[in-house]
Length: 88
Image (tube, rainbow, N blue to C red):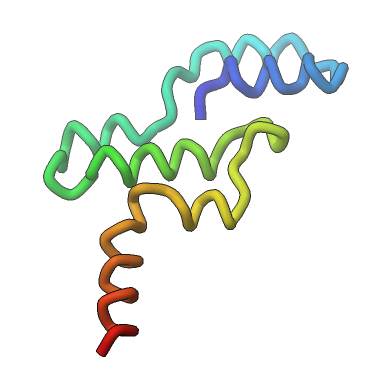
């Protein structure tokens, strides 16, 4: 997880961070998922990465709930399949 998000979150909670920690956190960019997307684009659908980003949001006030996660487009094919099975 990108370090700036952690810094911003700590500031929003008025939580002081050690200057060495801030310096180290500023070096960290992106989410980490970018590597997998570049290495295996066919195995990392954009919907899956979007869901991972939403689930791993640093700020608990912005992080999605389990109910919201289940409504994410990533799960639409699975929900569609379940609905088809219920009709049988």
